[in-house]
Image (cartoon, rainbow, N blue to C red; front, side):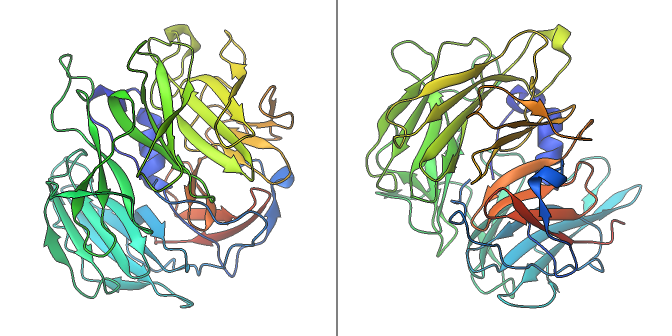
Length: 401
């Protein structure tokens, strides 16, 4: 899960809504298998290895409310946050999926009811089988945290401030930004640092060796091979840049310095085998009429040592927007979900064609330990999951009330 502050999120209103409603999900025993060609709708954790079919996640349409955060561990157990909202109050729920279970179970939620029009600001970070951290309030930092290490049977109130340092990101741990103060304009963070959420305790620690980047540091993705990427700015030029670690954050090297873009946002990296894609979102001219603009796309075939810019924004040329993570499939295709349609490339991101029948918001994809997870556009509780980006399974969660 990714967080931000101030206008850094206002510039991606649609992405924020869809990202919350379609975070991390799986597949159902009742949903049909589909291929990407026939289905145009098609962190903190690395995706499952390519070519491995995802496990079937059961549907639970009887759970109260609608899901706004769903996450999985690598063993296909998981957690979900749901909310049922009336005119004056939203009641919050937590559901847990045990490994190999045929349904989700409700557990006691540590989250209070939300009254008035404050909205839901809770977040979820799954830290391994039976382990999760719930955050409350806008990040960073959160207003409060709760940790469970026993599948939601008990919750321990945690700290919102880091304690001590750690040399690396443990397996199952999460890399998150720490924004202790806003920048002068109040639009984002002053030069920030990275924290690690410990998977055994849910506590925050400062990563001892920070990436060689300036500005606001934002986790940009993790590959199945264990590469960690962080987005920030080149200290010398101020241009958008990526740093990569091959040893869980103990050491870092600069991976990519992108052509300077005044209104660029944090980059995002996805992988298909040895091929890496770095998607660079940003603010497009107002006449383009999009909130989640797409500035450029970079491609690497050598572990992020060298990059080629394969696509760049041109006036009126799609895709002009991107919501969620791009889907890099094992068949060599790359799919980007935009605000107006779904776009697919079969030449390494150099050109795109609109997927058949995909007009309008098509939802968004998120990288999870089980593969890519696709959520619907309007919080319907419908999800799909794919380990290879080609074949998908579906499931339903929540009664939508």
